[in-house]
Image (cartoon, rainbow over all chains, first blue to last red; front, top):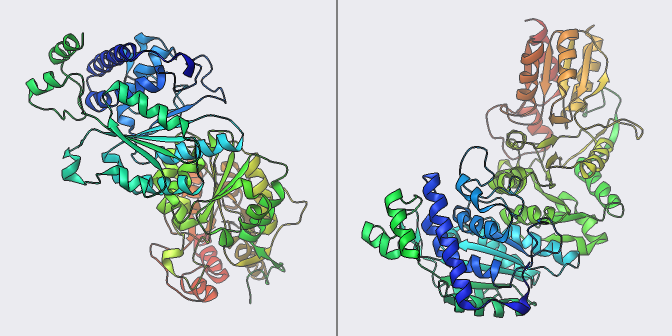
Amino acid sequence: MSLETDRPAIPDLQDKARVLRRHIIEMTTAAGNGHPTSSLSATEVVTALHFGGFMNYDASRPDWPERDRFIMSKGHAVPALYAAMAEAGYFPVEDLLTLRKLGSPLEGHPNMRRLPGIEASTGSLGQGLSIGLGQALGCRMDGIDARVYVVLGDGEMGEGQVWEAIATAHKYQVGNLTAIIDQNGYQQTGATADVLDLTPFAPKIESFGWHVQTINGNEMSEVVAALETAVAITDRPTAIVAETQKGFGILPILEEVGDTNFHGQALPADIAEKALAHLG
Amino acid sequence: MGIGEKSGLSPGPATRDAFGKALESLGERFPEIVVVDGDVGNSTRTEAFAKAFPDRAFNVGIAEANMVGVAGGLASCGKIPVVASFAAFLLCNAYDQIRMSVAFPSQNVKLVGSHSGISIGEDGPSQMGIEDVALACSLAGMTVIVPADGVSTAKATEAMIEWDGPMYLRLGRPAVPQIYSEDSEFTIGRANRLHEGDDVTIIANGLMVAMALDAAAELEERGLSARVLDMHTVKPIDEQAVAEAARETRAIVVAEEHSAHGGLGSAVAVAASKNVPVPIAYVNTGDTYAESGDPDGLLEKYGLTTERIVEAVHRVTAR
C-alpha cells in the first residue's frame, strides 16, 4: 500500500520505471508478440501512480472496496500494468513471462475476470473512460473516497464514446476521476497527426469543464507534479495530457532498427538484448 | 377481432408500463438498483424509479455507448444498474459496449429494451428492434427474456434483479392482453404451458403469446388441439419443454415479433434438433425491415397474426 505522506524520491521512481521497462521488453519478447512500444510510452504514468504514493491499493486484497482504481483503456499497453502489478505483489514477477500464453491470466489485453486487480476488461478502444466514470460514480454513491485513473491513447481519442464520457463526467461533476492521455503521437498505421488529428487535446477537454494539464509524460518529476495537482482537485474531473514518445527508454535502439513506431510487435531476441543493455 | 379476444383474455398494460411500475416498487428492497438512462426514461418507463430515487438515476444523454460503459463501471462497484433504452438503440448502437463492458466481464448489468418489434407502429423501422434478440443471444453468458404480459413482466423484472449476471429484458410499446394471474409462476429458463394439446405445439413469446392462445382456440373449433408454450426465456431456452413438445405433439410452430434469424425460432430449432427433431414452421417478420403505419396494420402486413399461426399449424402438421 502506498501513502501520500511518504512519496518516494524522483530518482527512485525513475529506477522503478526502468525496472518496469525491463519487464515490458522481457515479457513481450518471451511472448513473441504484443505492444512493447505503446507500453513504454506510458511507463512513467503507470509507475508514478502505483509507486509514487498516489494510488491506495492492497495487492493481497484486490477487491478492497476503498481502493483507488486504475483502468488501462488502451488495453494493448497492458504489459506496463502487468509489470507494475508484479512489482506491487499481485502475482510473482516470474509470471510475467507467461504473457499471452494459453492458460495464463496475463492475456494480450486485460481480462478482469481472470486476473484479480484488473479493474476493467479492455481492448476495444474507447470504453475505459465510461467504465471509470461508472466506478467513480459508484464510489461516490457509497461515500468511498477513492479515485479512478484511466489511461487512454491519443489514437483512442478518435472514439466518440470517449467524448460522451468526458461530457457526462462534467455533468455529474465527478471529482474523483482522472484521465491521462498518453499522447505518444503514433497509432497503428502511422502518426496520429496524419490519421485523425485531434490535437491540441487540452482546450477541447477544457471546453467540457474539465481541469486539464499538459506535461512531458516521460519526465517523472512532471508526472508526479501533475498528479499532485490533479488529486487536489475534487470538484470536477481532471485530465493530464501526457506528451510521450512511443518506445521511450529504448529509442536509440529503435532508431538503429529504423522503426521508431514499432507498433504491435515484440522486439526480436537480439534487439531485446540490446534494449535491455541500454536500459541497464 | 382484437388480440386475445378469441381466447377470452382481458386487456392489460403494455409490458414497458408493467416494468416501470415493478422497478419502482423494487427500489426500496434493492438499494443497489441504479437506473442509467439515455434520455428516453419517459418512454422506457424508468422515469418512475428516477423520480422516486433521484440519487440512484443517471440520465447520461443521447449517448448509448457511454451509457452502457457507465453501467459496467457501476456494476463493478456492486450496484445493479438497469440500463433501459429502445431495443434497437440499446442492442444495435451499443453492441460492442455491451460485449466489452457487460458480457465479457460478466457484469451484473440489466439491459432493458423497450419498443421492440414492429408493433411500435408509426415511428417506423429505424425505431423497431427486430434483431435485438439475436444480438443479445449471441453474447456469451447473456440471459434473454421476452415476457408476454404485464403480470409476467413484473415477475420477470423482480427475477431479473434477483438474478446475478448480465441479462436482457425485451419489452413492447403497445398495451397487450393480460395472460397471467397474479399467483402464476415465473421461473427464468422454464417455459409456461398455457394451453394443453396433443396435435401441435405453438411456442411463442412477447406479443405473440396472446395470438398463439387465440390460434389454439380457433384450432380447437376445427378439431385440432394445440399446446401453447410461453417461452419467455429465449436463452437459456427450456430444452426439456421443447423436447417434450416435440415428442408428444410431433410438430412445432414458433411465433415471435422478431426477424427470421437468430431469435426464438432459431433457439427452438436448435433445441429440437438436438433432442427430438420434428417439423417446425415459423411465424416472424421474415428477412425484411417493416415500415411506418398503424400497429395493427403492420402486424397484418408483416405476417404476425393469429391467422398466420393457424396457417403455419396446418402447414406443419401436414408434413
